[in-house]
Image 1 (cartoon, each protein chain N blue to C red):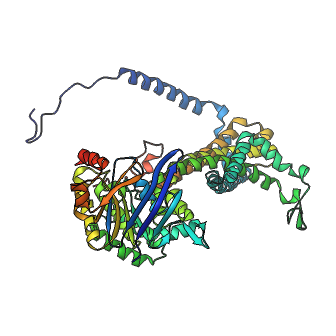
Image 2 (image 1 turned 180 degrees about the horizontal axis):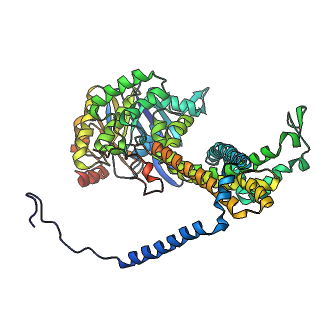
Image 3 (image 1 turned 180 degrees about the vertical axis):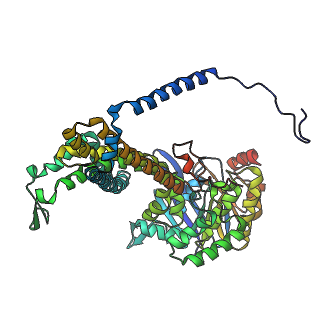
Length: 253
Length: 302
C-alpha cells in the first residue's frame, strides 16, 4: 500500500536557522498521526512542507505516491508550475491555528468558495454540500453568519468544513485548538474525533495530549528539527525512551 | 424618589459643567450671523448674476468636460494603479523595480509638466507607428493627430493618477493578513483567483477612502488642463469673467458646482464602503455631513 505521506530526509532552513534537520515520517492511509514537541521544534514547518506552503531544501516528500511541488523525470527534478502546485493542494485539506476564514464571506460562502472557484462545481450542488458539511460540524443554524459573528470554536469548525468541501484525501491540522478559549477546545476536538472515526488520514500538530492518546494511531515527538521518538501514543506518553521526550512530557502532562 | 422595582437607585449627581464650550458656541454664533448678514447685504456677491450663469451653456459645457476628464482619468488611474501595485509586489525584482521607477517618475515631477509633455510629444516623436521593434512598421500616425488636446489631458491626468493609486492599492493589499493568501492557496486556488476573490475584496476596505479623496481631488486638479489650452468648469467661468468682470459671482458659480459634485461623490463613497465592509466589524463610521442619508447599520452580532 502506498503511504499517504512519505517524508525522507527533509531539511528546511529559514536564512541561517535550520528548522528541519533530516526528518523521516510515514503516515499510512486512514492513520491519524499526532505531532508534538516544544515551540520552535519544527513541527508546524513540517506540516506546511507537506502541502508545499514551505519549499523543502533537500529530501523527498511524497503525498499518495506523488512528489510534492516537483516532478521527477529521467532522474532529474523539475519544479512544478504554480498551477500544478495548486492542483496538488486540492486533495490536501489544511486547518490553521488562527482559522483564516475569509472575513468578507459568510460561513456557507466560505465553505462553497473553493468547490465553486477551483473545482468549478455547480453553485446549487456546492451549496447543498456546504449545508451538509455545516450540519455535520454542528453549525447548520450559523450558515449566514460572518466569521466575526462566530466564536473561535465555531470559526474553527467552519474552517474544518471548508477544508472538507474539497473532499481531501489528507487533512493537515496546525495546532487547531491553540488559539481557542479552554471551554471551546472540546467542540473542535469532537469534530476531529468524528473525522478520524470515519477513516480520514490526518496529521495533527497539537498540544492536546488527551486527544493524541485517545485518537492518534501514531505519536511523533519532535525537538530541534528532528524526530526524537515516535510510536504508539500510549507507549510514547506512558513510557518515553529519550531524555528529551521525558523532559518535555514532564512539563506538559 | 424611589427606583422602579428590581432596578438600583440612579445616580442623582450634578453633571460637570463645560462653560468653555458655551463661550465657543456663542463666538461661533456671532461669526455665523455676521457671515449670513454680509452674504445677504453685500451686492458684490452678485447673486442675480450667479443665478444667470449657474445653468448657462458655457458653464454646463465646462462642467461636462470636468466630469468626463475626472471619470476617465480615474478609470485610467485605478486600472493602471492595480496593475502597478501587482507588479510592485511581484517576486520578480525587474517587474517590481519597473513599477517603482514609474511611481518615482510620475509622482516626482509636476503634473503641469507632465500635461505639457504629452501635449508636446510631437516635438520628440513627430510620428508614432505600430510594428515589430527594430523591424518593419505596419501603420504610422501623425503624433499631433493621434494625441489631440483631449488625449493629452487624459494621458497626463490618468498616468499621473496611476502612480498615486498604485501606492494606495499596494497599501490595501499589504493590509490583508498573509494567512488569507495561505488559506486560499491551501484550498487549491491559483494566485490570480486568490487576488481577485480573497485579497482585493478585503483590500477594498482600505483602498476606498483614499480613492474617494483622489477622485474629489481630481475634480479640481483637472482644471490644470488649462495649461495646454483645454477647458473645463473653472476655465469656462474664467473666460466669462474675463469679459464681463463679474469675477466673484462666477467663482461662486464654479464653487457651487464643485461642491455639488463633491457631495454626490461623498454619498457614493459611503455606499461603496458599506458594500465592502460586509462581515468586518469596524464599527459605524463617525458622524458625517451626509450621515442622515445612512440607513440603519447592520444587525449586531448575536
